[in-house]
Image 1 (cartoon, rainbow, N blue to C red):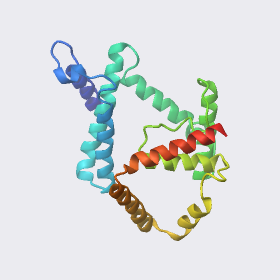
Image 2 (cartoon, rainbow, N blue to C red):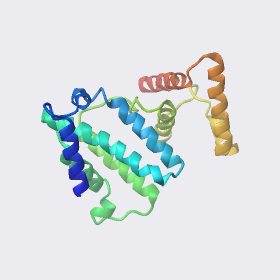
Image 3 (cartoon, one colour):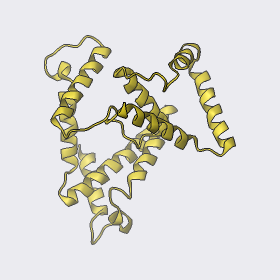
Amino acid sequence: MRAIEDLLKTVASLREPETGCPWDIEQDHQSIAECLVDECCELLQTIDRLDMDHMEEELGDVLLQVVMHAQMAAERGDFDFESVCQVVNEKLIRRHPHVFGGGQTGDTAAVLQQWDQIKAAERKRGPEQTGRFKDLPRQLPALMFAKDVFKQIEKQAIPVDGLLNTGAIEARAESMDAARLGEELFEIAAACRARGIDPESALRRYTQKLVDTLDQA
């Protein structure tokens, strides 16, 4: 793990008040938050293309953002990179008792069900939260946000009569493949462009309105 140690030292040097880089020193968690989004998008591009020549570099750029946030937190005495690794490692072990606890799980569906049960137990031990969709980050891209909201609707069997045309959704799911659905999504984006509507904002507003309505039901 020498390379990780070297990276941690490099980032700490960049943040050193007297000898570091002026730009790096000026940054805080919020000022570089968008950098993480940008780097993740660039990584996703290499994954979509299975571009192994550049995926390694983009993974490094994402890791740099993690290390930078950990360094900032360490300077404040909040946490550091080691504790970040420790927390996620403990979570992985805790949520995979069929691997690390001597238990047995039949298939992927059973593993996912077990994962959800463990997460639910963890939430009960944490601060009280309200709402059916409390675990969904509102900063997700609108399409991912919409997909995850519908996933929760299905998992929790939330009644959506009068709110969603479930028949049309099922018909699309049965009759369209990925290419046709992609074409339809593109046509919707193009129609938004023609009307001067931002499709990202339109979908986010609709999904948030649906979430608010279901949370109040």
